[in-house]
Image 1 (spheres, helix red, strand yellow):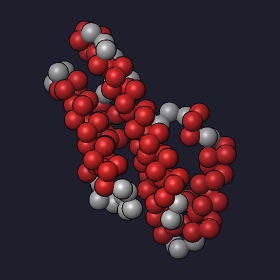
Image 2 (tube, helix red, strand yellow):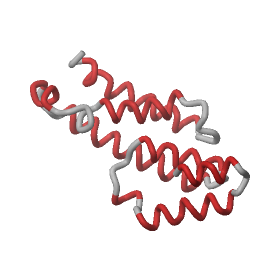
Image 3 (cartoon, helix red, strand yellow):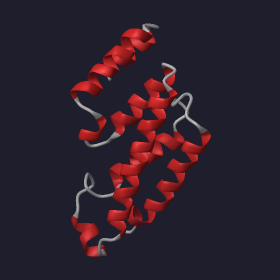
Length: 131
């Protein structure tokens, strides 16, 4: 991701896209846990004019976040307290917050930004109950 970002910064779009394509070939997004780096990859796709790929990655992030929030919501409070931040809700909320608050994700559809905010607000009560 860092190489693709550097290439994009140097206006070497074709090389940046090739790096992202190779990364996805080696580690397909559907085979790895989705995290902050996926939001960064989506941002690069937006910058490189690959809106379809960026939107697909953001949608996959939203699906993953929704599943995690629903999973946490269905746990008993004692179970939610027992899980770590990585498996709990904090990482998910961080990803969503980075999408809806970020002004650096150029090209993101305003509806997607609002969806991130909606999901964040849906998960926030589960985060706050342990505070």
